[in-house]
Amino acid sequence: MTAAISAKVLERFPAGSPRGSWPAEEYAARRRAEGEPATVVMDLESDAFLVVVPAAAD
Image (cartoon, rainbow, N blue to C red; front, side):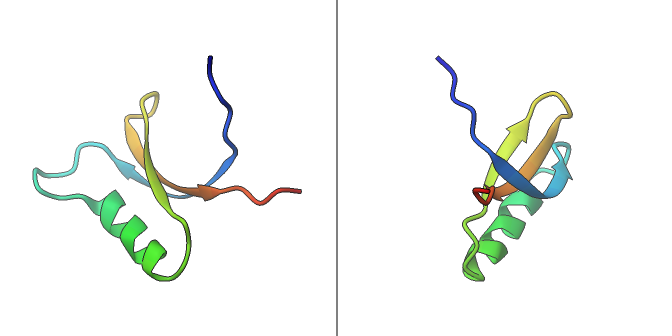
């Protein structure tokens, strides 16, 4: 079973960052500090980390 979750992408970061560097996590942490529920997910198709927030319900 799979679940579809609607989310807005705030920023994309290539997965090939230097060892010890976590730019997507650092960006998400700054957004969370500002009160936004940011999460990092991996987009396997584009080999990138995405910082996302839940999409607003219409």
